[in-house]
Length: 253
Image (cartoon, rainbow, N blue to C red; front, side, top):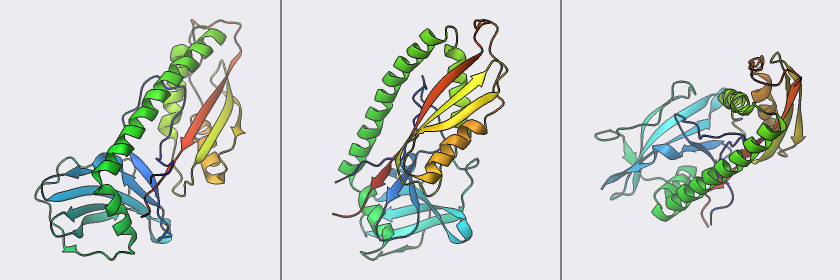
């Protein structure tokens, strides 16, 4: 059974889904102390092999990214390559053919076996994909309603608020130790683009998640000044953003 758990960041003011180089999902695995992420977009399969990428926090808090190959016929796993993770340089692999890896059996109690058991289960991956697609569709619907609400409250600010949201999203950094939850951040911007206030309106229950949500907003300052078409009497705008964190349980049942 898959528990509520896909790592997704949704800011409910978005009108359009962003294009990312990867779709990292935080995995809950009981038999490891590592913080594991799976790149959902990296999963690919041919007649004989399955490929995917994970990343984890290694020694000295260094994040590693590991490219994995699974031999379906021989039931063996191999590591194509492993290197330090760089958020700005990483891209989901497009071509896996003719990749070499030293293949070996993995023990039943290995966390790699838990991940692999999940990834090779077509039904589970399909459910995950469907769930994520549904969440995106619901987010788009909610976003339209919220943008309508803000446009009515602050006439002429639709494009400005959308641009603010996109910049904040670009500055958001996932905490490696994400433990799920929902954080809501309330912040105010004045006409000059200065951040007047910023606070957690609803805690996710995870201190680092809350801090990452606050930092996403604070690190974006200074914002652009209000456009000339916005009412001159409007001194500031008050925005509520929702940061949704989920963790996918892939432990064997």
